Amino acid sequence: MSHITTATSTWILLLILSVPLCAIESQQNLKDQNVPIIIIGAGAAGLAAAQRLYDAGFRSVTILEAEPRTGGRIFTSQTSESDFVELGAQFVHGQDTVLHDFAHDHGLLTLPAPTEAEGWVVQNFNLTAADRASMDKEKAIFRSVTNSLERPSNHSNTQSVESLRAPLFSDASPIGQARRWSEETYDQCVRNEMIWTASPDPRLTSPRSYSDFKQVGGNFILKPSVSMHDVLSAMTATFPREWIIFNRTVSSIDLISNTSGKSLGIAVTTPALHGTGIRIYRAAHVIVTVSLGVLKSQPSLFDPPLSSRKTKAISKAGFGSATKLFFKFDTPFWEKLEPKNASGFGLIYRKPFLLTPKDSPNASSINGREWYRYAVRFGPETNANNTIFLRVGGDGARQVDALSDRQVIDDIWPILQQFAGAVHVPRPLNLIREKWTANGNFLGTYSYFSLESALANLTVADLASPEWEFTRARPQGNVAHRLLFAGEATHSEYFSTVHGAILSGQREADRITSYYSSNGQVTTAASAPLGNHATRRSTALSVALLVTYVATLCI
Image (tube, rainbow, N blue to C red; front, side, top):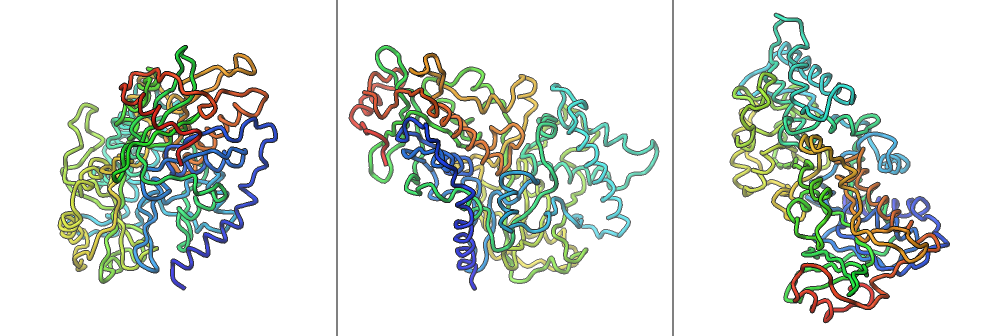
């Protein structure tokens, strides 16, 4: 049976099985199921929000998705009739989460996934067993001192990950004891950390990236016949797919007010597409689920501007990129490398290093090296025949996204040969990837807790806080919000994960539901006459709002 057939069958089975789990009884006291709601983004957060709203009884929801697909930073790419690769999110991080429980209950998980290389390869050097043992020891020291940062008592808001870890790593052995491969292994572990945190430099990272993050158990991967997109689709299976409008980027999000300044709703504008005019969608509430990178790049997206604290939280929060490159070969050269059957090989470079524990906090930037210098590990891709993955983080992820496929292959081929030693490496046949930093709809992969945020006493809660408050008519004085925010960067414990994104979407859907599940009722943009557009946008936009009036939502 082909993979397409298998994947389709799996998805249908998941759909059937998931209905009892997803179908929550609609709230009987919901006042207005036709209140118009817009969700910006059809990634994990957006789809989860849509499903939650549907389960609560809302029926007038529109999802504006900039890409021609759902999933956002979950991106499964079919490489052949039988093969696929995960260009985006791949791991189920830990147990006792909404994602793990669903996948586990439906028998979709394999054994815990290895998170680090099982073997080592050194550039232009043949390793001995003693060398590998030294590297394993140094990696264990690095992991131990980094794990100590999970305890808040071990750090303060004024210290970076590197300023805390470097002396602990250096002092881990008795003075005078030789530590072979110490700096080389430290360099590789720093590059590996760039993958897991998405931070380009541990001197920019707050230890709260570790102490605030919660995970029970290791990482899991899905069975070979199941993609992450399959699981997300099954978890959000029952809301109407006609709610989603593809290829709709958003150029402005504007609060609508009448002549007396009373909030009436929100206008969301999408630019002209394929010869059509601009479209303006109106809603009582908008859930923004775009990446933190997009929010950082578009401070003028909102009118009126976001609150000062919200704006500062966005600008100072950490957001980076980690990319996966998939190279297909005509023969699997890696099967000849030692140790046999390793799931991955850590790349050990010789001097000069990106960073050593001896570097001061004010040492020169670790950016600007060749992109492959930020490569961490490679190994066989289980879901694609004769294919390896290569993980690249830090500044290398940004650099490689700017290069053509041919240039990337030209660059990496001789480097792989240097690491393979006597094992012949054929030229890669092709490259499969997503250029996350170059795609304006993402501009990176996931968030981390930055030292800059910690120094400013800003938290993830500031990223999650709603904006554009207004007072409901009944009960008198009850406060609600027009503009809400979801996405992995807005979850205080599960940032950077799929389940964090899912929970954030559910959180904001529940927030909206709470506005309507009592006897109170708001004046919605659908039912209220369009008054003055009391913002600083151009007069042309105000005229367009009048001309392009849509009674409920533009579908």
